[in-house]
Image (cartoon, one colour):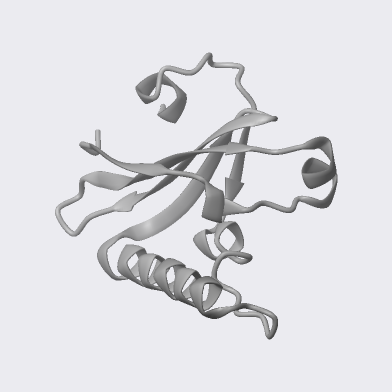
Length: 115
C-alpha cells in the first residue's frame, strides 16, 4: 500500500528500519564533536522525541538502493498516518557498512489518512 501512495513501482526494493536505527548516527554524541555538531545532535534527538511522543507504530521505510526515498511514518491519536520524508544517497561503501548520514538530507512533512 505504501508504494502505491508514494507512486513507486510495486517491485521497488523496500527495507524497514526502526526510528532509533535510522537516526542512530545523527543522535549519537561524540567526544570529538564541536559545538555546532553537538547542537545538530540535539536537534535530531528532539526530532526523534517529537516523533515518538506524537506517533505510534513508528517505522522507517527505505525505498530504493542508491538513491533512496525514506519515509518515517506512524499513526496519530486520530488514526491518521503522518510523518516525514527525506532523500538519501548511499555510496557503495556506505551500503556495504550500512552507514548513513541523515544530517545532510532535507525532509518534508507528509500526511495521509489511514485507510
